[in-house]
Image (cartoon, rainbow, N blue to C red; front, top):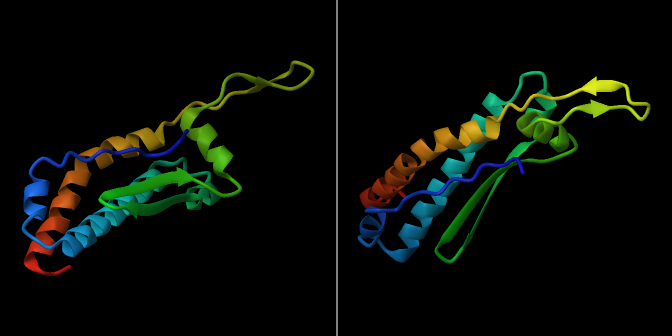
Length: 138
């Protein structure tokens, strides 16, 4: 399925989070998760083919948390989600019922490319959020 999956390595971040209260640590992680998913949505929309403006608006993000687990998703939604999935992953050779070929859609892999960029940026975003929590801004 066309969506962005990013895992953040937390080496060193946990020790820094121990320096603040649990409430402040949760607020920092929730803020960082929101910023990462917003950045992922922006990257995916920017890399999507330009002829699908209405499809670009259908790339949405959602955040949720359960205890100490914070999840952010970026995925296509809405009435044109299937078009964005086709453009991301491509289609095979298509044809009409009578066998007449109608072509195929070449895969663009814009969700995968956005995910690779986000993998590099996410640790810095989390580090900034933890630094803000330590400074008392959050």
